[in-house]
Length: 500
Image 1: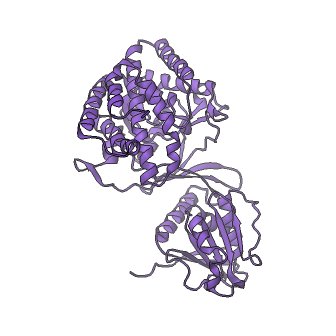
Image 2: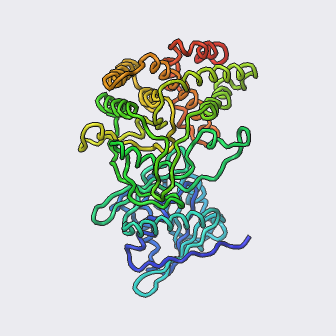
């Protein structure tokens, strides 16, 4: 294999050095090692300080030089250990100063890396800094997947340049359970936006009939659905982020920053804000919505249906992951066959119910409170790229049985009644059919989430999702009290009881 091709970046001033450090910080991960080379005064410490401050999201964060202590550690979003090996006697001393432990637990920055001998991992990123004219020249050479990461982050900076935000600071905002990542960017004069970094996801393995999970579940694999739905919601009078700039082929968006105030109060649902979110859904569902939406490049996005393929591949997560996790053994074939048959019948009932835009993840992590706006526009709506055409009741269940925060039964009932009242006030509405579709939707969502969260814990190394399991089981138990789910309730009693 040929060695990676060095990437050279001109740094005409100190601000450019800081921006490059931020660009690299945006792509850091646990286990990364960055070796900084250069003569005295070339800017190694300046670069390291800027990178640490970017990860800390604090331009004034104190970053002392490790020249005399050899190592300085920082408890930032990603733990960072900053080594200066100038005073190191030999590479054998690395173990004594905790180098290997630092690599395993966080990000490592090294000045004078030549004194580490052959101890650096082959996947490390080397940044050589040298004085050039009135500025600097940085030469980046990375092993592992660093070439792809460097290319991506520099492409994002170029996108910001084209969007008149090239001088903006970049700060990590969040990642999610998918491959998407978000940053908050802000120009020196205070203009702010959110950058969405979502390269098109390559097809995964075939899981059923030669089709991938994304295909069966109609999950977005590019930014195009997000753009279409965000524009569609905005045009309908709701608060979705405005698209400020877009590179659709690259999967990079600059969107309106709606802030960070959510719909929770002290970690619990705020009744006023949840109530307004219910009103948003009632208004959304009371008017027929289009199946096709325009895109900025002239194409048309077709919103997929919540069909049997989508429902069944999602509930299949429970026997594949959750049942094995709870029981310590797979379900018997007859149990799986009965499970599929029950859900086939429930799907027919759900498919016959009222349909609208089904936003799919209408719950607290994706809802913002915008007090400066009026009416329904005080609820900001995020993460709608997986929207489908399906049961109106689904998003109501998603909100009132929020998998990440407990909605007490009394509040759930009151808000469900509020939705029904709001719909009846707008015209004819079948409340009984809604209640049945709500129970089915809640049970389907809980079934999917139980399996999905166990999968994230076991296959993706994210055990934090398991803490939500008791809450989701509680929601499922509430749903199973509805007569439309009597068959599913009996299935759980026989094959997968909540308490053993």
